[in-house]
Length: 130
Image (spheres, rainbow, N blue to C red):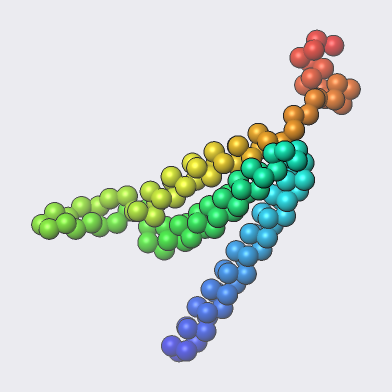
């Protein structure tokens, strides 16, 4: 019975790892598509942003796992004091997700601005007053 449980846990972990790698590869493909649209003079900056964003995505996955496993609060003991506090993983997740969003915005801001197609864009036509 113990061996069966260990086998199931191992299979579960392998599946989780496989799913994670698939999501990471999907993200890399999407970022590579985005990088192709960025002007050459801004590409070095964009590539560095992508590396950081991908690292943060990995970190966020790890933190999510910790939060799911251990919860959002923990019992904290210091000397005679004992209280619950926000989990360090949740705190790190919240900080990281904010920085992830900022880097993602910086990356998208490097994309060329496209002028709206007047004939195909109903919102543009409405604003223009036609």
